[in-house]
Image (cartoon, rainbow, N blue to C red; front, side):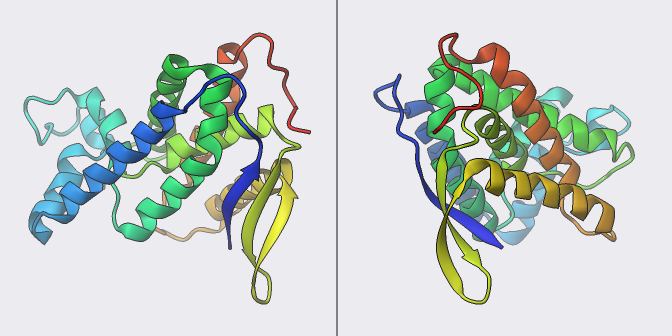
Amino acid sequence: MFLPLHDANPIRHVQFPFVNYGLIGVTILAFLVQSALPPAAFEQATINFGMIPIVVRDLYPQPVPWLPDWANLVTYAFLHTDWLHLLTNMLFLWVFGDNIEDALGHVKYLFFYLACAVLAALTHLLFNLDGNGPLIGASGAVAGIMGAYVLLYPHARVFLLARIVWLIPLPVPAFWMLGFWIASQFFYVLASNGEDVAWWAHIGGFLAGMALVAPLKRRDLPLFGGR
């Protein structure tokens, strides 16, 4: 429905958001490795390193014996189903992640990103206790970035590509764009009919980002800024 292109929100505290770019690079590299595999091996990789609720709950043996069950709560976030899935997540991370790294600092930002991934996966697990399919993708962690962004910079101007009748670029406040996005996730939860999309992971990640960013942000950084 819409894609963010960039935001008018310069970074002020870090010289270079290398953690954010590193996460993008590692995620793309992981997908390139996936893509080089034969189809059967590609599918097996999603099973081995995706988050499968019955495996994390120890109801079914871990496919990779040397990998702890809890590790899949992190590894799943670096796998994707196809290029569209990957590039959409990386675009959102590119646009919004640098400002959150700026707000938290490098080390806290890495912790924040991984924590959002874990909490998004646990939310998905909570609503799919007997799920036997692998959850993969950075969407939950990226949703955490978006939740933090809307709390810190609701008034920042985001330029997005929206389909109304034609594709047109629109400048809108972050609050409206990200508020509409999270509202749509709740709508899809209610309207979905067995769709293979982890809406609850998106919601869990978004709420986790909002909850974590306040105690982790720089002390001199106010909430509800971005004017």
